[in-house]
Image 1: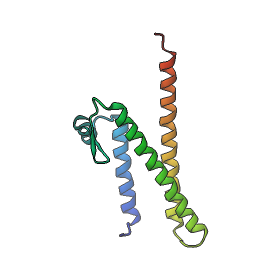
Image 2: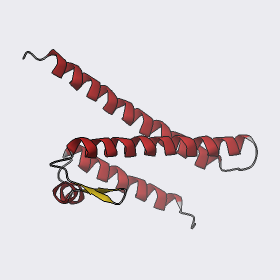
Image 3: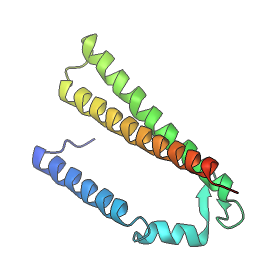
Image 4: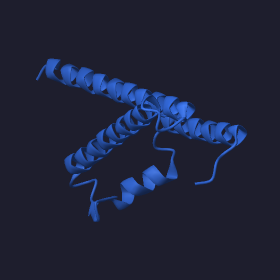
Length: 127
């Protein structure tokens, strides 16, 4: 794996932040997301039709997000353990991995809280 300079790393991070801001401001402006919704989402070698299998697509997406957050957490834990045991001297990498895991978990909690709030609003609706 080729090492990135600090400037390259900053530029890559800024590019990702700009992409996330664009998606956050208008999630359907992204051509890939819109195209995937029209074509159907491919997951685990089968195509999910978003019109007929919305619950399955949501379930697969949610599982994918949870798996990603879990992967970030375990990767950070491995890096921190390696630094603590003296097997690695990559303290910066361990810190970045830890921050990435923390940010992804916080974002997941915000989404969960919003979903719970929306569910409670639906429950309170008069019939």
